[in-house]
Image (cartoon, rainbow, N blue to C red; front, side, top):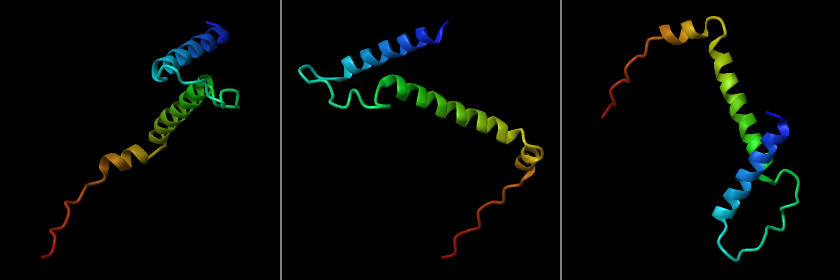
Length: 83
């Protein structure tokens, strides 16, 4: 699948969402031509962010000793509240 095909599918999804969400009779947004305002940009920024979070989370637990520290740390019960 070429990147152009992905762009076309994302643009079609964005157009369908905007058409569904915009009430009838509302004009086009005057900011439609601004940089990073289109649905394609928002979609790929969200995908990049979620990829960053997922890869960062996996990498964090692959550091030596971190998983052992998490698994062996005993949790102490909360002390009773003093009256």
